[in-house]
Length: 254
Ligand code: HEC
Ligand code: HEC
Ligand code: HEC
Ligand code: HEC
Ligand code: HEC
Ligand code: HEC
Image (cartoon, rainbow, N blue to C red; front, side, top):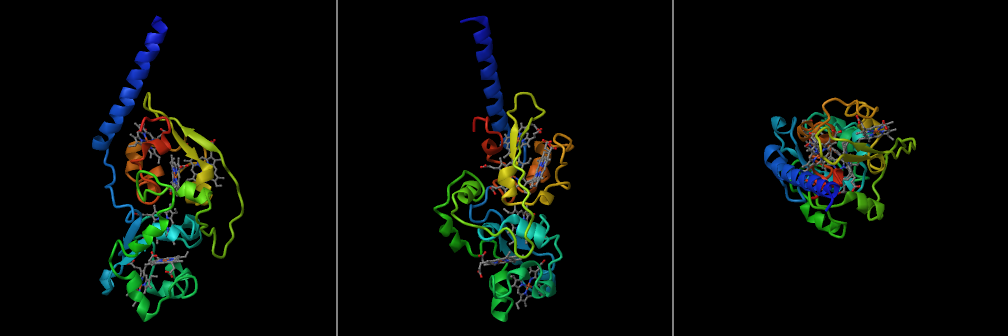
């Protein structure tokens, strides 16, 4: 074996050993989110005002709602924040047709009658989980809801709405970015615009989460992502979670 070939093999062994070691270490060293049952991943208990006002906290399920509506409908058009218990949802605003009430009006979804209160105010994080089995034919992944939402959408297995009243302007921007890690030997993360803008508006990410100029977003690294910033805004709680390394770092071994 030539000196050069041996050097390449040694480098490869070191590289993959490091990548694997890092992964194993990462799970202990970094604080990964707890593994929830797939039908509870993305489910929220909203309790900014409920219990203070003598009603049970509100249940909300992302997997159930994203089957019918893209993120932008709620997080752009209806102005829900992407942070639990920060949106000023009130019973009055709901009844006036804002927030939940934009759909829960007895037409698009169940309304606000006496019989309906408990469908939302039940404090039960896994409310409605029976319907999860309706998604059992969707392509699978290893973490989160364990559903490959990207493939399921591509295959037309469901057709979420893109807007309720305000049609967004078509602005196809499909650039796929390679985000080179600053650590030596870490395979870069990929960021595909195409798969994101099927769900999201540009303004869900720009300029608040990411600068529009590549590599100018400060402190853009795993500890911050795991702390709920950058990719971690969505990929800890709703979109496939960070445990699924390979989906972002396609050249990692697992
Ligand atoms: C039907 C409406 C609706 C849809 C569709 C929707 N969301 Fe949400 N989302 C909410 C509500 C309501 C909250 C809670 C807001 C609050 O409590 O202030 C929320 C909260 C969040 C949070 C914060 C979670 C946390 O634990 O703090 C993230 C992240 C999020 N959504 C991402 C998404 C993504 C990504 C999509 C699309 C795949 C999506 N949402 C689709 C209504 C929706
Ligand atoms: C589609 C879901 C939904 C339904 C149905 C619903 N609510 Fe609510 N309600 C909410 C949400 C979301 C909030 C905000 C909760 C929070 O932040 O704690 C809320 C807040 C409230 C509050 C807190 C104080 C206030 O005024 O905002 C009360 C009281 C309340 N609802 C009563 C009711 C009653 C009574 C009914 C039935 C007649 C009802 N709700 C039906 C979703 C719902
Ligand atoms: C963009 C439309 C839309 C918005 C906004 C919306 N929902 Fe829904 N929701 C639906 C539809 C459609 C269904 C399914 C049809 C039905 O059950 O009537 C549903 C079903 C539900 C269910 C039944 C269980 C389940 O998950 O299928 C609950 C509980 C619920 N929504 C709570 C909420 C709460 C709380 C909010 C506000 C924080 C909210 N929804 C906002 C459209 C919406
Ligand atoms: C949602 C996408 C995503 C997932 C999933 C993900 N990463 Fe990352 N990772 C990134 C991004 C983005 C960076 C920063 C790239 C840069 O520096 O521009 C990064 C950087 C890194 C770095 C370099 C050090 C640093 O802090 O920048 C390591 C090591 C790393 N990731 C390991 C992992 C491991 C191990 C997993 C699985 C347990 C994982 N990542 C899952 C997106 C992801
Ligand atoms: C889910 C989040 C997200 C959405 C949605 C999104 N982007 Fe980006 N965009 C990013 C990230 C991440 C970067 C890289 C930032 C960095 O490296 O600092 C980026 C970078 C860019 C860049 C710079 C590219 C380069 O090569 O330097 C442009 C231009 C851009 N986005 C335009 C858009 C437009 C237009 C839309 C809507 C059609 C959009 N983005 C939607 C996350 C997003
Ligand atoms: C505003 C929310 C949001 C942010 C921020 C975000 N993503 Fe995503 N991402 C999604 C959603 C929603 C999907 C669709 C898949 C899902 O929900 O599991 C997705 C899909 C992806 C996919 C596609 C996987 C495939 O199978 O094709 C990759 C890769 C990805 N994200 C990487 C990243 C990286 C890297 C970052 C940070 C630079 C990031 N995302 C930031 C919401 C987000």
